[in-house]
Length: 132
Image (cartoon, rainbow, N blue to C red; front, side, top):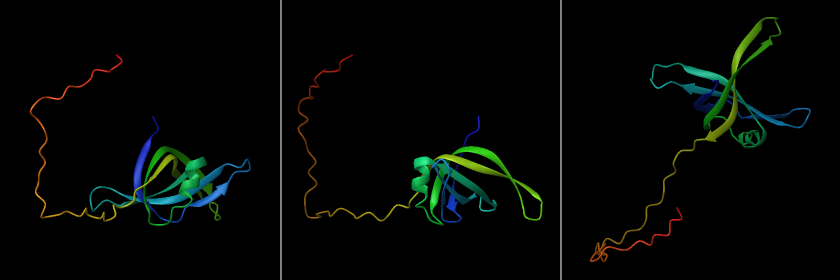
């Protein structure tokens, strides 16, 4: 099974291009680090198609994302004639991981009594409307 999920940060703004048949493709590089502080940073190219590409096209360098997809080999030749092989994630899902913003705290009346009582003198009857 060829499946990968990886989180990391965009190394550059996502670039959008279109195939001759009109399909949209978004490409970006992503930096990911292991769990330990000593782990090296891994750089990998990511491409995604269709509606996902449309959303990813709005992402910018440095944004934290979680990518789900498959790995594929890519090869090309440099200008000096050397052949290069690399792995690319063909993402079928990209989730933007945004940091939690400070949520406003609800106002609490510290003078009000904490009265959470409810009538527990008799158990409530539950109507049995389950169709199975």
